[in-house]
Length: 138
Image (cartoon, rainbow, N blue to C red; front, side, top):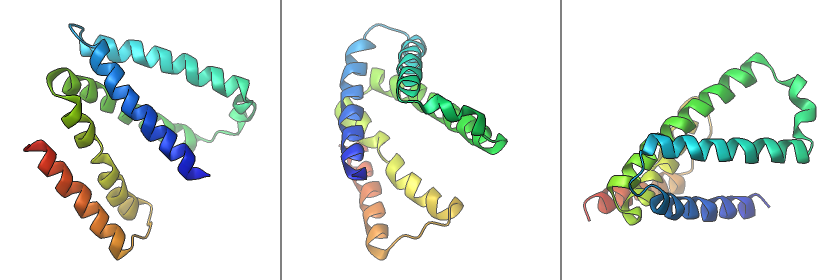
């Protein structure tokens, strides 16, 4: 079932790039990111309330809050740079280059989370990086 959610994530990430490119024409990208963030804030809290996710808020630990906070900072910085890249570049180049985050996430998961990667997985990471380099120079 996880792969269905992953495919939905990829689909909506693709729509994000298209809608963002259309929405940032002649707009400051920091303002665009701030507007997008408010929408996401409302949507995320609405879903959390509707599905009962807020019932366990008292169970959050200091470690949960620290790492969720760091994740939020990383997300915010990612969005700021992504919108700036979209404003300057083509979606057909920016979006795929942004997805080198997949290879970086795999590498970091091996280093920091002690996750294992198969030899075939290593080949996949190298191919993602190689594909990104090709897209940058195309």
